[in-house]
Amino acid sequence: MINNRRDFIKRTAMLGLAGAAIPQFGLAANEILNKEDNMMNTRPKVLFFDVNETLLDLTTMKKSVGDALGNRSDLLPLWFTTMLQYSLVSTVANQYNDFGIIGAAALQMVAANNGITLSEEEAQEAILEPIRSLPAHPEVKAALQKLRDAGYTLVSFTNSSNKGVETQFKNAGLLDYFDERLSIEDIGKFKPHSDAYAWAARKMGVEPKDCLLVAAHGWDISGALWAGWRGAFVSRPGAQLYPLSPKPEINESNLSLIADRLIALK
Image 1 (cartoon, one colour):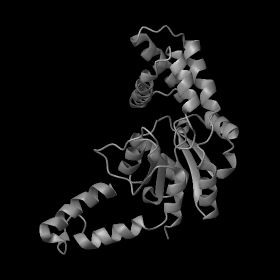
Image 2 (cartoon, one colour):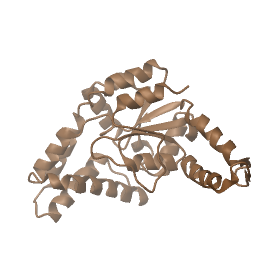
Image 3 (spheres, one colour):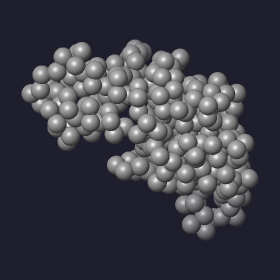
C-alpha cells in the first residue's frame, strides 16, 4: 500500500519528475513523499501486538517439540512452516481449527515424513501445554509499560484462540498491559489473510492507516502492510522480513528499542 506507492513515487522522482503531477495521486512526487513522511512521523492510534515469539519466548515449546521429534532440532523450522501452511489451507477452504490443534496435526505430519511414530495425543501434549506457559521475553513488560505510560492503546492480536491467549497472558503476567485482546478465532480467518487485519481495525474503531502491527514474523508484517497498516518488525534471532514485501518503518532487535522509536513519534 503506502510502501508500494512510495517505491513508485521515488522512481518517478529519480527520473527528474519530482515536481510534476502524478495522475494516479493528483499531487507532485515530492509533495506525496513529504505527506507520507509526515504520516510516518505521526503516532498510530492503536498498537497491535502479535503474541507468540513477539511477546512470548518459544524456547520451552521448541524443546518440547524437538523432544517429540526424537531430538531432531533441525525439523523445528519445517514443523512451524507446516503449521502456518495448514492454517492458511484452512482459511482458504473456509475451515477453522484452533491454532494449537493445527500445530499438533502438523507435528504428526512432519514426524511421519521422517519415520517418527507420534500419536495424536503425544503431538498435542508436546504443544498445547508448553504453549500455555511460555514466559515473556525479558524486555517485554518494561517496554509495554513505557508505551502505556506514553498514552498508547495496546491490543494483542493473535492466531491463538481467545482462551489460549488469556491463559498465556495469565501465566506470563501480561494481562494488565493490554486494553483489548483480539483473536482470529472470532473471524475464523488466520493472519496473514487481509480480512483478519480489516476485522481487527473495525473492532477497534479505527482506519487501517491508524493501525500499527508489532510482530516478529515477516509473514505477519507483510500481511499487515498489504492491508494498509503500518508495521514495526522485531528482528529476533532467526526472524527475517519477506524480500518481496514492503518494508516496515521500524526494524529493531527487541521490543524495548521499538518502544523508544514509537514514543519518539509526535
